Image (cartoon, rainbow, N blue to C red; front, top):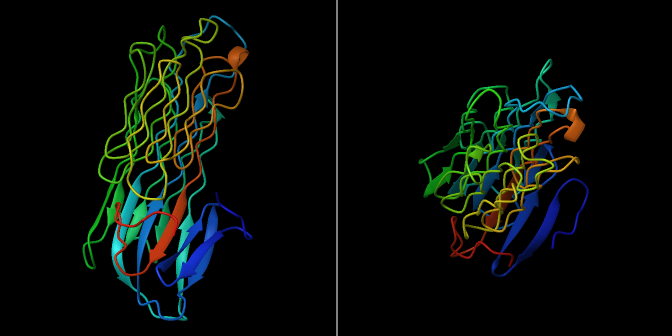
Length: 297
């Protein structure tokens, strides 16, 4: 597991290579270690915050959707100079918010600049609209590159079906799953290692009133895609965290980059915040995203 040091993590550095992960939102300067002349990077944007309707009327079933999932981007063989510093930005998860004011988008995450390896944050939840999926930028100027868009949300109607769940975080070679409302049995599964979308609760107390958080995505390389649960949460992809199932708690998106859930009435809760983003840097011979020796070494 991670061992925190200040606002980022130093994982290891040795003969087989090294790695460093940044998992707390903020802006950092990463210094290339001695002997390191190229790196491989993965970035995940923060998930969008879910929307809630600021009324305690327990009968409301408005389409106050969850937030979209953050995108994922990866780029290999980015040239660096030992001893030089390089910019790392980690996007925060968006905040849940009421219909009158609005929830907020997740922040973008990137390495070096906003053109090289960039994962946009998820869009904020909104009333009675389908939230679009977030996008990524991965330059082809160096080695191989790729990524996946964050999942959006899909509503069935303005009321009667409740809020759509949060979107899943993007994968290494496919998109995060879309969040869905009670017009579907669950959110959509992730693809290419991405997180699944959240959905309506199977609990009759919460169905049509609260939606689950979208699944996050891991930063150790591509793995299995997230599976959407009939209990309303989006499963994490590639080892990422699951979104929170519908309840009266903070229905947060999974780490990293899952969209927060929505709520049609505060009688049953306030929806949730999006999962925060992350940036991970690896180096060493024979290591490359999406899945070549990208684990913890």
